[in-house]
Length: 82
Image (cartoon, rainbow, N blue to C red; front, side):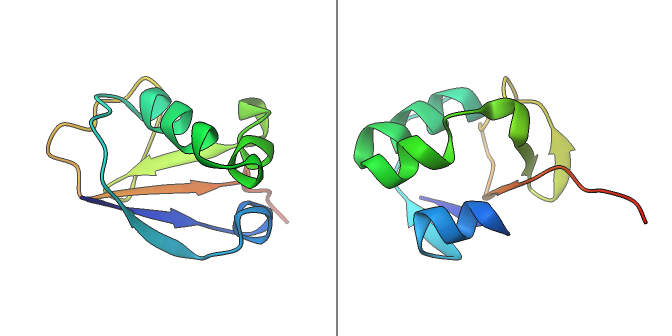
C-alpha cells in the first residue's frame, strides 16, 4: 500500500485529499495509468501531466521516478511565486 495525496485542483477533481492505494506500479507514470483506469474523475485529473508536479516521499521528482520502497506520492499543480 502507498499513500497518495492530492492537492489544490487535483484534490477537487478526484474528490478526496488522500487515499491508500494497493499498486504494483514500479514508477509514478505506471501509478498514474492505474489511477486513470479506475474512473473518469482520475482520467480527467491526470489528463495533462504538464499541469502536474509530483513528489515521492516529500521529494520533488519526475514521473519516471521509481516507487520501490516509497511510502507516499503527492500530486499538485506547479507552484507559483509571488
